[in-house]
Length: 180
Image (cartoon, rainbow, N blue to C red):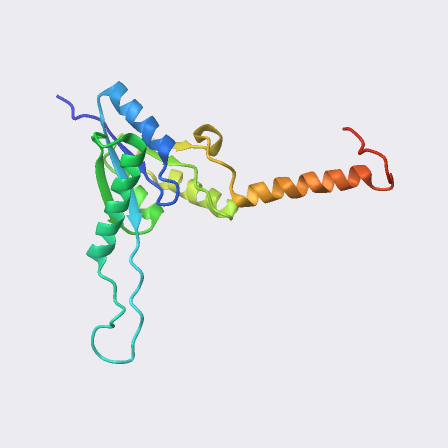
């Protein structure tokens, strides 16, 4: 008898990846699988010290992982409710390396589209994840997940509207803007 299919969802610490979690749960219900919610966490490096001994600013890795796990639990409960039945994992490392490692031996990896102020870094992240993953990857784009535009996209839209309005009224004092 074959093992049940496993779907891993990379859960963002900022947005909580609500649509990715909901979609993965629906998929797991349909195929009789289980969902693992995964969060990558990094400990801050201990500050270098010229004095011998342990730096007082050294961070406890297990405390960081426990906090990431608790935050992941809060995110999943907020999206799926208390009886979610999702396995929770917080893993030390960068988001891409953690997701690539998690893709080994599972049936599907689900992530929200990466969103940062630098769209080119998002494209690089997504491309490298797809190139290195060991299973199929489903990426939930912002247009499907209903996420609001980033502040950068919103600012660009407002700026573009203002430029068009200015161009339409240029040299036409007192007249309404030209209609496209």
